[in-house]
Amino acid sequence: MALAASVWASGTIGVDVYGATGANCVESFSRGSAGYSLVSEPWLPVLTTSGMRSCGLSGVFDPDVIAIATGDDLEDAALTRLLLAIHIAATECGLVPQEWVDVHRSGFDLFDVHRPFWQNPGMAQFAKFPGAVRPLVSASYRHAGRGSTAVNVWHNASELVFDSGAAARLLVVRQQFSVGGKQPFTTAAYGSSPMSAKTSVATIRPFLWLDDGRLASSLAATAALSGTHPVGQFWFTWPRHARPADTGCPSGVLDGLTWQSRSMLLFRGGGDIGPGIMVCDGLRWPEFGDVDAPLEPVLVPHTIYCRPDGSDRYVPQRVHPERPAWHQLAVMCADPHYPGGQSVSRPTSPSGYPRWRLGGLGAYQAAISGPITASFPVPADPSGLRDVLTEMSLAYRRIGSVTAALAKAVSGFAGYRAAIPSHTGCQAELEVIAADVATGRLSPSHAVTLIEAIADSTISQAYQSVAQVRPVAAARVAVQKPRHHASKKHTT
Image 1: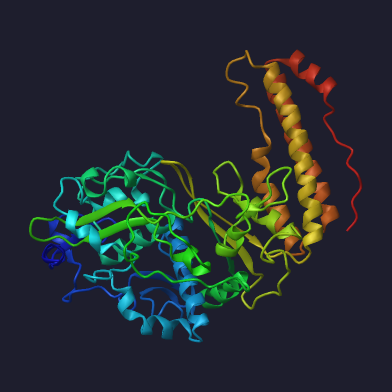
Image 2: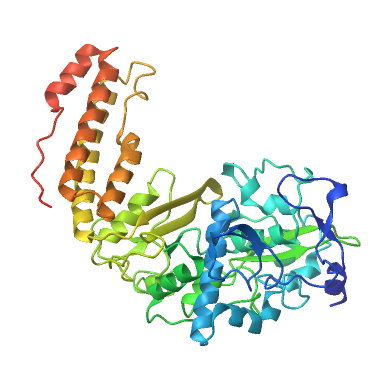
């Protein structure tokens, strides 16, 4: 314990992450005390009805707060997800969130020696091992760029450092959205087993929430998605007697929201140990088989689900840069059998029509494509939206069939295959049409007409791009595949 106490001696970990670097701008993590309270310290940037301000957990639930606004989409989603867990835990105790966080104030200390928030204090014994403590910039996805997380575009010696609030936000993001792969931690600590980590709970289960224009009421509406599901346990710190790479046993919704997917420990610096962070595999989320699959919507209801082709079972659906996230939300809204009641229409909110929001990290193993976010209005008529989405699928097939044939016809003609327009070029237009149908500004029958016109236009552009260089090939494809589509008539 003496070593653990020594590494928490007062020191510094750096300056505000937004721009300033160098020794002249160093800010003390302790701010004159031994800890850093996430309840009272202003570590949360928020947008309010009167502008921007920073606050702690005690003020983030105020009625004038519109949303978390850090400037980073992944941070916003991760912090909102944490606040949802607090709201659910408070409601279960019959308290408002402000009262609940005050009661549990000691559990939200970022630098408590024995119970640091969402950290494993036992890692302190390995702090002097070579390479165990790394600069915080190496753990931040905000500064990791594209590709493998092992290749950080901000060199560890760049002097880009974090203040207390930025370090806390980094911690919240990494506990929820860490990717899999080898972890930068010494093998002498826990052996080889924790070196290869599983992805975090929210990395393969993006966060879904309902936004009505005010953060507190949005969290209350989102919390209702858990229905009668078991509440489970809110995890403040690393579980006793648990080792990295152990598989845990979640019991309810709060477990899924506060699961510590990484074993981490922040260091303020001082003595022989510089400022930084230790990171390795955390408590692993169990891999549910087919028999236990129905548990997923019970333990993690605040995410997006889909049914694989030929299956009646709903499984979590990742976000992906080539999969329009707004379309995932629209399909969810139009599905009458979707688990959790997300397809149920809701009344218009005081600040405008309520919207579903989705936030996640596009990643596969250790490769990161970046944060992916989307929003879609809660539909007034889910059945009408369903008809429109069906028509969109038919349009995709038409465009895909023609462009694939054209691409094959010019496969030996360098440069023109990539120039052929595809259905992905229609996404922006189709998103507007779907949203207008959801809010009632556009009738389904009129939407179908617009979708057909967009498909016809895209196909015509594809023919024109090929006809400029291979007119015979374009003509042959045109004979084989009609350019225009006589669609079935739709009624409102």
